[in-house]
Image 1 (cartoon, rainbow, N blue to C red):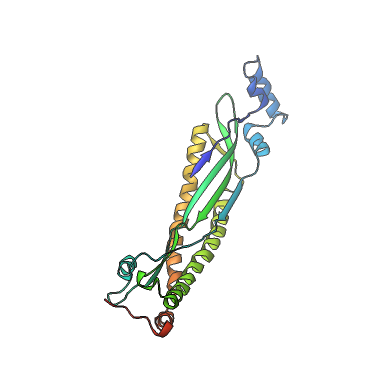
Image 2: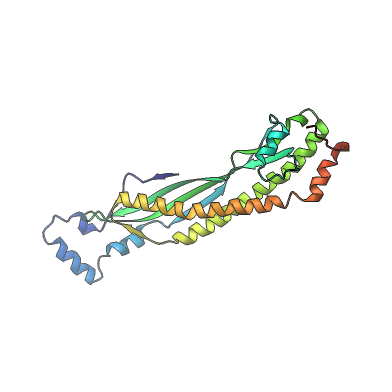
Amino acid sequence: MTLRLPRAWVAGVACAIAAGLPGCDAVTGAAQRAGVLPTFEAHCAKALPATRVAVNALPAPYDTDFSRPYAELTRMGVEAGADERVIGLTRARMSHRATIVVAGIEEPRSRKVCVRPEIDVELSLLPLTVFVGREFRDDDCRRAAIVEHELKHVAVYRAYLDEVAGEVREEVARAYGNTVMQFASRDEAQREIEQALVGYLNPLLERTSREVKRRQATVDTPDEYARVAAACGGIELRE
């Protein structure tokens, strides 16, 4: 995650910039009571650009790995039963990268700041790898049958990534709204906004790992396993 603050922050209420001028406090107070000058809070609400949240799912190309024997794939498939052998396996890691650009106004005397963020989140499935047992690398027919099955898992990953992007976009936008956030300093603004975004994203992505696991299980039905096993006159494994 990266977070960037613009170098030039907008100054606060005009009289506050000229705080050294005689009678500035009194003039400002009277003007605010008369409704002539805005308070710092009102100035922030009016002057700051709206909060913007963008969440995008990156393209998810897959690599194919034929370098591992099926015995190794079986060990990698931690949920394989004692009497099962894994001849194909698809693995992906959903991750995110977030960039926050903070538009802010600083009140010169107090150094208090108000901000509305621009948040960009990219979701990815890299690396996305289809593993096929090395024993089938040169067996065109059986290799194709195994890859065909594994590409169903790839499709589940890709479809769910797009769905998660929409969910994350809605939840983060709802969490931030268009609220003007106030902090004691620029450093506090940077720290608190970054921590808050991590606090929103991490639980969301933890839920996705459980849900994608459930959806992948719907691909591995007994009928589908039987279909692959019967391909090309049957797939036999030699211990």
